[in-house]
Length: 384
Image (cartoon, rainbow, N blue to C red):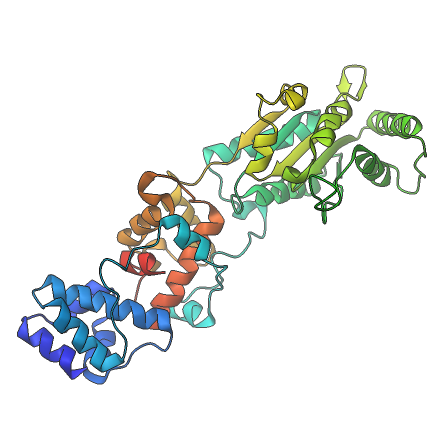
């Protein structure tokens, strides 16, 4: 990289200044400038080439001279400025696949565990003011009956809240029987796959509350049997909670039938609480303007999980604490701001949900480790 070294001398810029611009240690830049030691991975090389080119041009080097010097040394052409950000934020996110934190990144940042692993207990769940409300609403529905739907984008934290609820029931020995119909292959019409029907829900109730009891064959006898079984179990001190995951795949007729399950009573006591968990399509199905489900919507509280816009720094602090690190040891302020920018489309939309955050930062941690950067910086986040 002697050509790069000469360019730096020509513009009277130090390697330390270039290191600050790239977010790398001076030693890493010294290896780059003096010995041409690039990272092995393409993403790291691309980052160095494009951002080094930006650094030189911003300090008076002609774009052609900067690109030519870098191309001769590496064999790669820096991306033209008008092509570097030609993808929309939505396109970038669509291209971002599930990322795995490399062992090298864990060693580089001295992480006791992957900060983005699934939480292992209720104590590890990050709670916003909204998720605290959802947690309490779920518990009240389990204790006293109710009908609610938790809706959110993929990776918004719906399943985490469900697991938190199940752990609470088990840990505190709540006398609550959880009924979870299997939804493998469930679709909202019989052309795409198998629909979950009221009869299947009745079978799941019987199999969970009264295992070994044969379900009646006729629909009238079966549903009467379900009612009697729930009533007897309730009088024995049990409460019952029906949880349906992937509920966006429920057909409209089944959603309407759920109202009838909810109305099963023993005097003033509801015999069955119902929790639906699904993606945004579920909210569309439960739109109060849809006359087909109006009676259901009037009885069902729909809660839509929001992105972590205002809670981003607190969430990151919590996650890295689980891995035994302070946030400031891993990311600087520019990285947090860049993450917010990348996942909010400059304010046009927000996908600051846990899964998207995890994917972007995992890729950024891997890239930083590959480059030898001491911390994740804003440019590194924007690069992935």
